[in-house]
Image 1 (cartoon, rainbow, N blue to C red):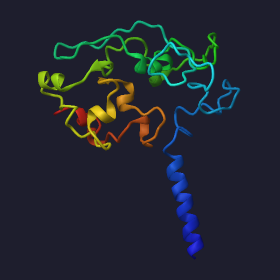
Image 2 (image 1 turned 180 degrees about the horizontal axis):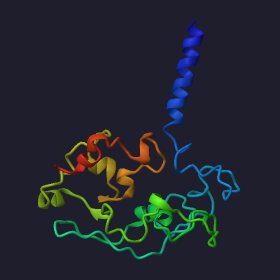
Image 3 (image 1 turned 90 degrees about the vertical axis):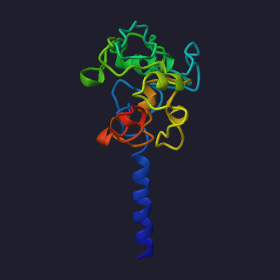
Image 4 (image 1 turned 60 degrees about the vertical axis):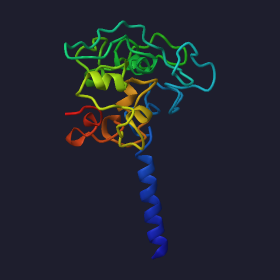
Length: 203
């Protein structure tokens, strides 16, 4: 009986760990016919001959978009908007629909592009803004935002420590590309009752 309980516990733990990785997630391309290597990480990362021209891109292996983006704009926006930074450009290199998914490892003539809801396009005006500085000064100017330096992210520390990249809000602030949290839509935390949104937004 103890052995059975141990086995069930081990299997349950294994399923829990499995559910919190890139394996089986929307970013698992290991079984796609255009990924002839069958490798899990190779579409985005490579241990050798990586693209060193893009900062914030560990061992990057995918073609990077050169698109110019239409930025989010609002009369109530207190942040200064800029073209997406390198961190978000990595995501947009597939999701803006201008670079083929299989353009990795030096390939530049792929024909498979993201479609449907996965394709954001280069017009970001209707999406949550990214690549803007989110700091105490912004939260002071915009009373609808919490101070990221002192507000808990719910992920272990403050918003600044856990969610911002070089003090900026980027795609990866809300989305975990490696699915480490095991939450739908690759989110860093469950958004039930707008919990993720309300981490930063003081509503």
